[in-house]
Image (cartoon, rainbow over all chains, first blue to last red; front, side, top):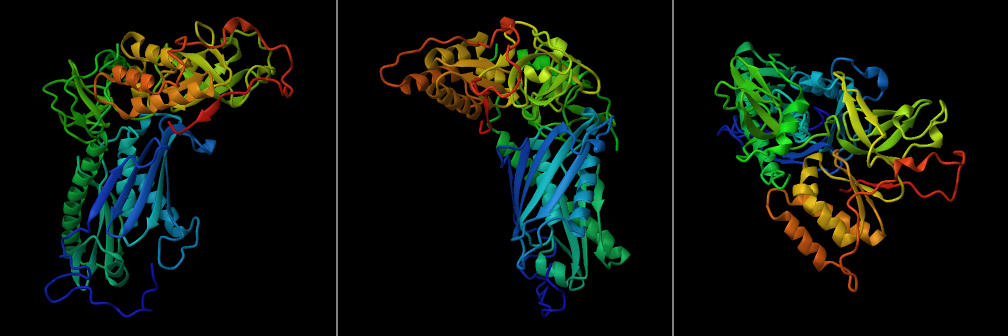
Length: 250
Length: 282
């Protein structure tokens, strides 16, 4: 994130209702998802979403490290969200900080609510999310990548977990904020949806919205999640369209 | 969160699927509603409010009275009697811990070996990094895996290389009544030990190992098409080094388990054969 106030506020919404990159209020940035991007991991995915580039790798279920985190009745789900030093304009100081710890925690909790963790007691399912290029909405991109990677790793779960942020820019509710809109907008509302049940398993908000605006934002976000859900499924279908089937087996 | 009833043990379904691969091959994804038509939710599925959904990425397989999903990916899930290739990850005074690619490490107790091991002497027989062929003996509800080294074609592996493939591809590597693996050993002269866990040990000359490695990659990449054995054979004939016809080879050879314990103590013995090297680029 750049420092707000240092720069002049750009025109976020023009007279035609077009946003800074020409999108309409209810339009997503282009999104591309590739399942199975890494060889070493049990499951992986690469997401390019607007100017975000996010890689996710899933390992497990496997032995828990550190051992004391082990749970006797279910798998623990550990998530590490990390931004590369080169992912933003000004060098990001590498390593854990308050922000990445929080995001790791909320993403892990979102996954916990969909994964059938009790099938693998005393193990760990590790989700690594590496942000290579950031342009607002990286926790949502991370959730999408992590979720596709979990499916790719054969982890049993209720559903895939599409996610998107809705915000308020220049007084209007807008879907999928990019960096300038996030920096100079009035509110940001990331969410993750379980399409199967219609539940939200991640919902955070920064800034201010009225009750009506919040309702509109939730509507817009759920609609956006459904579009992203289709892209996620498509990525997995592409990866497994040449699905290996042991037809020669005895 | 609503959770459906999940009857039966997962391994039951997988066992059935191994002998009867689904013909229709419908790919389903987590969260997808399945046409259950009164069938009960089996492995890889869950039920909410009378509807059955897939919980895993895999192929839809109606197996009355259950509807189930046969996974296409994921870690190796052990079944009793599976023969697996593992590496030692930890040595305790009465047992070793083996990485067999499963969710958990599998303890190999010293009484489960063909050797007379004294307490505290385990490291004289197997050390961290050593490779073994063992058989899955029992599983308990907590996911603990019991393995044994006593039995036919079980034991320590000397030299060679281990290559990982997806456990789902192992039946393909074996082929119909072993035709594929017989073809490969015949044309390369390599010794091969196939673990049901997708870890393949290859012994022999560097050239033979390299050729088997190429073939494994070919098998991994060419999933659905039939006639794979023929294509592998043609590939092997085409790449046979000049002057060398089909070489002799056994299907499987492991160090016989009646070889007895090593006589020298475990202190560094420089002339000992090198342990297998792990090759991760499957």
